[in-house]
View: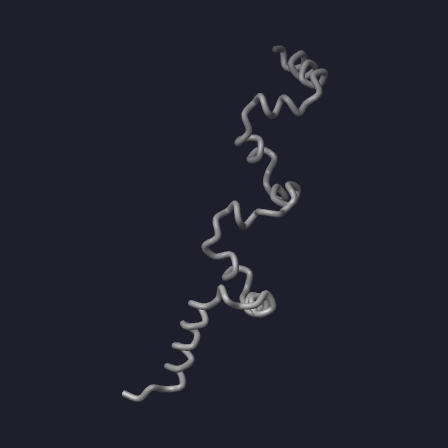
Length: 94
C-alpha cells in the first residue's frame, strides 16, 4: 500500500500535536483562531472555563431562585439590611 499525501498530512498533524508545547505564543494564537469556541473549551473543567470572568458575567442569565438555592440562609441574610429582615418578618407574621 502506498504512502499517500493524506497519510503524510495525518502523520504531520500527529507530530505537531505532540510538540504543541514548543509552539511560540503567536503560533498558539494562530492555531486557536482557527478553532471554534466549543472545540477550544471542550474538556476544560468548569472552574477553568469561568476563570477570569467577573461575577456579574458568570451569573448573567441565571434565575435568582437558582442562585439563592445554592447559598446557605446565613449567607443570604448577611447581605441584607437588618431592618429589611425585621420588616419582612413582621409582614409575614414571624
